[in-house]
Length: 184
Image (cartoon, rainbow, N blue to C red; front, top):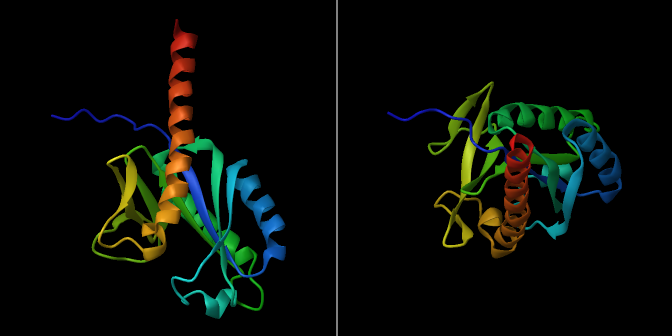
C-alpha cells in the first residue's frame, strides 16, 4: 500500500506572450502583487512557432519566462491558471487579450503546464483546467514527449528550464537544511 504524502513545493514558472512591450511593466506589477516576486526573468525571446495568438495579441509576439521566488503547493495549479486568465481579461482592450500567460510548475521530475484545452494526455484538475505533462526530467535534462509543443521542446526553452531547475533544487536543499536546523 502506498502512503499518501505531500510532495515538495514546486517552482512557479510563467510564460508571458505579448506583442507590445509597453504593457510589460504594469503586467509584471500585477502578477507580482498576486504571486510574489519574480526572481528570474528571461526575455524577450522570439515566438515564431505558431500564428495562433496573432489575432488577439497582434504581430511580432515575444515571450518572457518568469520564475518566482516563492515555491508553491502543487495542488494550486488550477487556481493559479484561473487567476492568470482573469489577469489576461483585466488587461484586455477592445475585447482582445493583450497578453497570454501560461503558468506551469517545475519540479525535479517534470514540467507541467496548466491549460483550458482538453486532450488525451491531460489530467482534469477541476473548473475547466487541465494539467499538461509537458516535459520530463531524464538523462540530466528536461526531455520532450510526443505531445510537447514545439517551442517547449526546443533546446533554448529546455536550457532555460534546466537553469531554473538548478536554482529550484538549491532552494529545496536549503529549505530542508533550515528545517533540520530549526528542529535540532
